[in-house]
Image 1 (cartoon, rainbow, N blue to C red):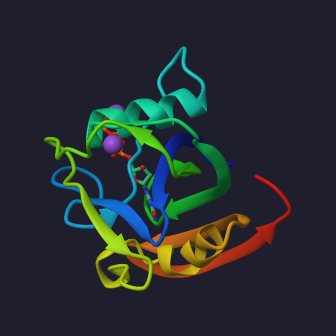
Image 2: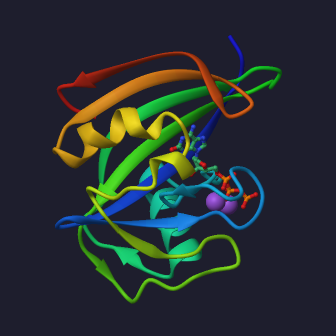
Length: 155
Ligand code: 6U4
Ligand code: NA
Ligand code: NA
């Protein structure tokens, strides 16, 4: 198989609101998403998720927990993204915009799915109701061409 690139994605969900950032540069520019990035040598996946949240949104999550794993394959790309999804509800600090991401709260009923990755509308409902999931989506540019998603018993 193709090499996997290990990435994190952390969603801060507090009551009926979710913290999302609009990516200002690089991969996914212009889209709203949770915070995350590449796991670095010498850190665990959780440490990477917490570091990226801190770098991109200026806060430290205190109760981050694994929620799912998504594989994303882009036609024409060498590597497959292996994205480990976390959620958190508690954090220290004030959400602060960074060079990479804005910080904006959205009501759970007003998530900007038309400005998010196309897979998000499928797994966000599972994440928001407390469940766990895994899935695989194949993209052609930013359109889904194939995919599977399943709810799982744990992360
Ligand atoms: P650098 O260049 O080091 O800043 P880094 O911030 O480490 O990069 P980045 O921002 O490229 O990594 O990571 C990509 C982010 O986008 C990760 O949080 C995973 C997320 N992501 C990628 N494909 C996605 C998709 N289809 N749906 C989704 N998130 C996706 O919800
Ligand atoms: Na990032
Ligand atoms: Na990074």
